[in-house]
Image (tube, rainbow, N blue to C red; front, side, top):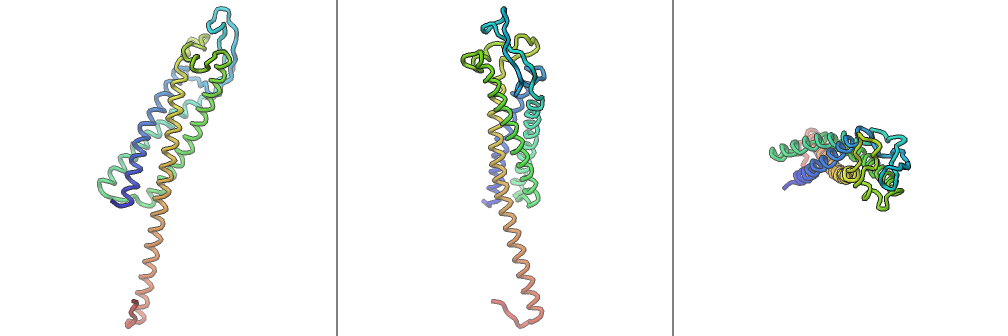
Length: 230
């Protein structure tokens, strides 16, 4: 099996993993956006307020300012984009393997740009979700002894009837795992593409060098037909 085929098979395996991890990003993030009625709790500003008739030691959460909506919606976008790109790459690589074609230098170079984009974007979104979830759980620990683990069993936003906060730990926790896993896979894919790009570049330089030597030999033979290069 040629080295180029090994690169293609390795990339196909990574893209297959990305198809699965895309669903681990899209579904939880979409559920969280729906549960919070379009609001994003990541990096939101809130405080606890007393309520004589409320549960949880007569405290309920008052949100002063919701986090940027893009903190949550970008996760859905990057998950959908990753799913489409991974499906395309899986089909593209499958066709190349079936036809026994090796990817060209231009194709690999374009793949490096795509992998770089997803690596950077997923690292940013994963950091946002991780930091936002940590801040939200830190707020929960002000009232609940076990923080988010205990708060998810109650409606801490009972004063907001259109919001369901009972699944925030599960949805954002699953999305966080999917985002970091996807980041690692794209990073590995980027390294694999860079290695393949370097191999193709070296082979191209070798071919250029061989063509130059052949041209010099033809020129010398043309000037001196009796010359023989051993």
